[in-house]
Image 1 (spheres, rainbow, N blue to C red):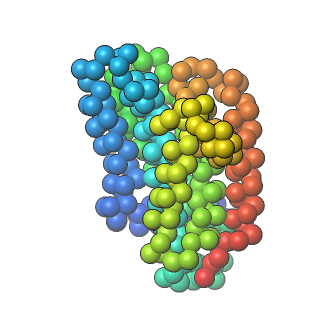
Image 2 (cartoon, rainbow, N blue to C red):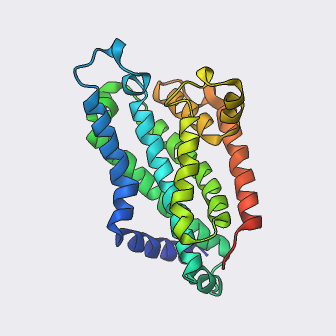
Length: 246
């Protein structure tokens, strides 16, 4: 099984690298957005900056990296299904879980690559002098991405055609982003939207990433870790039940 998994992972990686737009969207877009927004904050006093530019910009860039992986996964699975690729792969000796796990490994690998590129692009924010626990933050980002990818499989299972896969995934993830607490504090949202925000995984992911970034450690965010783990388990169970191979 492991040999088949790594072979399929390598094949999927090569296929992904052949699509420049996919690589730019997954790896390049979050970095460009980070650099652009950081440039917007230059010359502005810290007290006059919006909270996103003042302290949450690295968190925002990391979240955008995870969301790019989600959108990419939904699009790829939908294209594979509509093109009959999933049906042919399912007929191979490989277990269906192996086929899906290969996609997850590829997305996690490119998420780690994106974080590394962000570290290089934003050395002043991410560098050793910043005091940020980068390894712990990287683990938090990969954990967050993994949890969100389980939801991506649910979306990919429900999307009708490949044409609507990416727009629908983008609509869902950016709606979650608006309620994540990054753009607007959850406490400032109307009560009904606050309830919705706490039911979405991204608000808990932002809280975890923000806490780890500030050096609070995982132990201070066990509730968020537990909630994300439960959501991951639920998303995986739902995806396993409703996932369509053709």
